[in-house]
Image 1 (cartoon, rainbow, N blue to C red):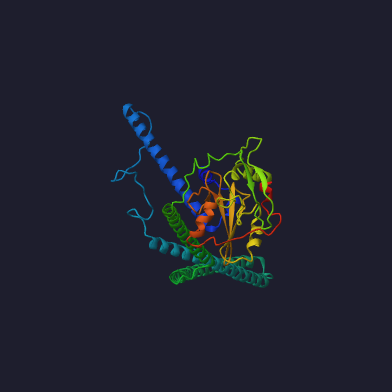
Image 2 (spheres, rainbow, N blue to C red):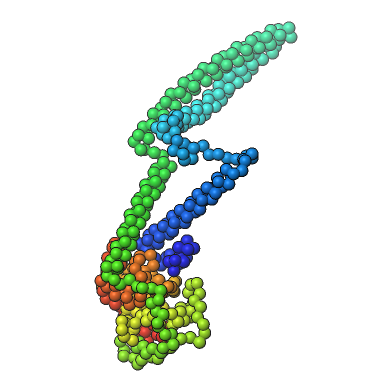
Length: 429
């Protein structure tokens, strides 16, 4: 299963949900290792292809267009990184310029608004004055003879010119006042923004950005910590298993097992039920699907592949191990372990992978570990690098050795059956 995940670089979301956080971190670490290996392989291939092309190009006369990379003193392709090259502005200068520009734009915006208001006031003021003066002249001169109306018109034009001149002076004066206010306001805003930057009194957007940055850094540190812990656990388990001498020989381990032998299996349900005669052979040729998709397929897989490998049996006996359970859900497993003490455990047939799930009772709740049985060995998916010859070997190994260094899980008390017939009965019928 792990080899298939690394080959496809994909894990089914449902299967991923079955892994705990530490299993996910170790699986991520292994996938990153595979990505790095593939990248190095591609780089080496590209380097060799480039060398061949250079050799071929040297033999031919190049008279077409081509691209030649600029190279530095070290012979590598020259790369410019903003902020590091000579002449690039430092971050502090860029920050100062951005703050000054923001202050200038804000002050300009406020000045434009003030000028619109001032211009409206000036226009209204002189329009009203002109209308009043015109009305007064009309009222006084209306009854004067026609020859005097020219003088009235001339006087009116003079007054209008005078009013326009005064209006223009007023406008210039208003513009000057607005300009001065704009400069003063720009300085005030610049100082305010600078002070806010120095005391980290940012706007709502800046606070949100800083919070996201803080959370991102914390998440990166947490992932790095978990990855380091997973790598240490991986090395510790590998060395410990070698010292114990309990790693399986794998590929030819079960070739001597006959699939046609009839086994006498006693269902260990505590009620002393009679022996059941089961045949491990099947009349049809068994071809395992890529993943379990139904309960019937899982049962057949168990009969075809797991019974011959004595999965679920006690060591050197024909009795079913007390910790072994059938196809039960995570919720059912937690209900069985609910009233148990820390260290209680059971193994159930998984519906997500070709393998099992070990459910473990810890002080604050439960943990579930997937056991990969898709090959000719048994190992925890993403946690324990050790490969065990039988499922019983894996369980016995972790009765003495913890599963993860962070959790310190030791398998202390097997959780047996509470139903009659036991939940594994369909597997052996």
